[in-house]
Image (tube, rainbow, N blue to C red; front, side, top):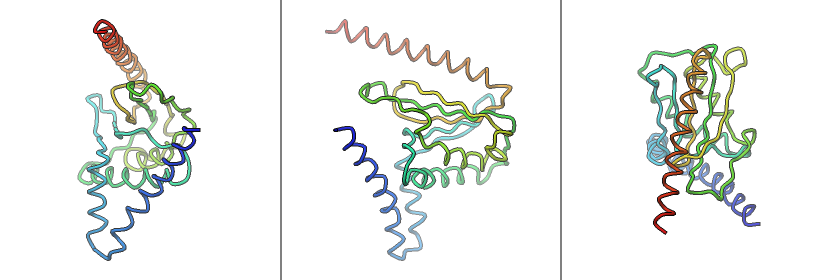
Length: 196
């Protein structure tokens, strides 16, 4: 019961955010769009760039919303301007024959929250926007998709575009990173038990 009420509140809040973003434009100010985008950058600081291996990496400081009404608009509202600004003065990049990776990271300090099924997470809009800037498109002839969920320090969504020839390297690094994170978590848990 509490979960359903919390979910309904979350969905209402998503719709409210989208509506309130339009309010400054109704004032007639010519600066409304720019100022709203600047406010979104402060509230949702999207990080992106290229790894030392040359892979594209995008980090959204929150989990992607559940598929449903308004979730695609919500993503588009902050991600498209961030990608547009990042690639404004850069040479175009086009990955072909690649893997589009979604790494959903859940805050380990919130164990009450279940990891969601990947098919219930709104990734389509992110894929479309990422493809617009670093791939010809996100069709199966261009890229494969891979999703994983892990526990980490905080909620976030990491997106990678990796050439298929490098995907095994990414998986190996992911497994090493997972082992390190688990060791840190185990050591922290052991230290907490000793302090009791």
